[in-house]
Length: 126
Figure 1 (cartoon, rainbow, N blue to C red):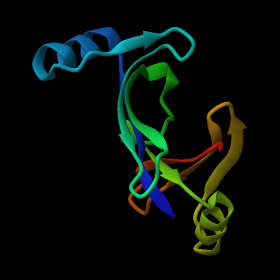
Figure 2: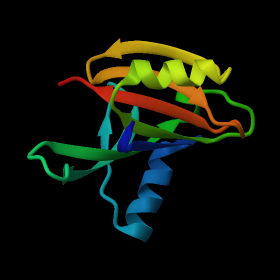
Figure 3: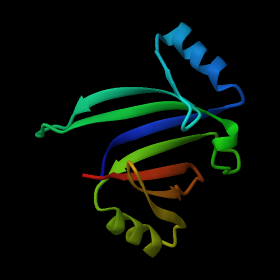
């Protein structure tokens, strides 16, 4: 089950210029992380009916980090629960699944919707 948008990832030939544009025109104050070579801003929130603090990430990365899916230039990251159930359902519908992979932030997998949009699924570690 999808519980929230985990993040939106834009890809750019010049991420600093794009981050500066978002700052100048929309007031977004991006931070830079050398580890991921990305500009990012987080939008914190609390889950409904819970005290868990969460965040949505809006990140700008260099094109070399972009998953190469023909004609697609952004990725939506969806926070999910029960990753295994979701991936089984997609496979049953003959959908292609890449992953899952475990990282510091949790488990990730990647799919394409029927129109080829690249979707990253994220199940956070508890």
